[in-house]
Length: 277
Image 1 (tube, rainbow, N blue to C red):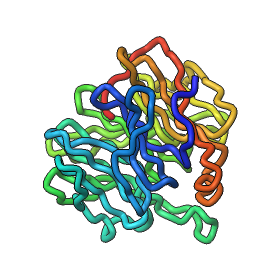
Image 2: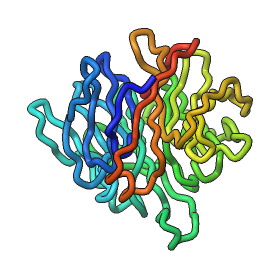
Image 3: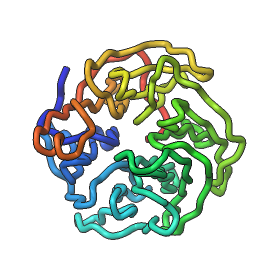
Image 4: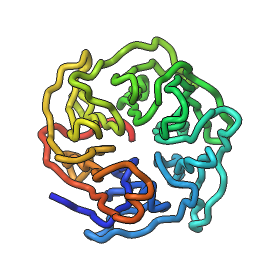
């Protein structure tokens, strides 16, 4: 079932306050679904990506091109929460925010237009006061990420390594015990991800045009064929058993901005969502 259309390019879907939120990256705004209608939350001129919330309810959003995390204040105004330009070598992308308001922000590491070779990059933690720390290195395009219910494990998609990588999170928010959580099969490329209550991860894989439910170790437990690029996913709905998938015909910015063929599709699944985001 399609629940939203006329989207340039949907990314970073989140289930928050009983409704679905997402970043329309090439449409330069954050939206949410209210009573079945799309409502604009804010404009992000430099392209939004990952979304999250501080404990006091203020929204954080990644501003990709200027490598910033923005914060929406209670009155709706937008402030700079953190400027990552001194730490992120290329544009920032997805983000997950833990229960304490610590944001883990990925970045491309290289340009996608083919003028640069693929190379690894860093993961940056932004604390609630806006201070920044590099918490992991040598990640190949760190993208969607989840945090387990107990707040002790971060699982992140390394898109161009075709794998999910896990870390332990300590009380200070630092990461350790890096390990491969799952190497994906069959050319699957992990973009956005979400976690369910049985510890499996749903993985949106744009190039294979599907969404995979993957167990630790790499076994594929379920596959949903989307028929076109699946770029991000989130479990939501009243019982968190609705899998929302952001789909689009391509990731080309000019084409998507002109055609606005992006959509959010919804599929009912058996196991509820868990963890963050």
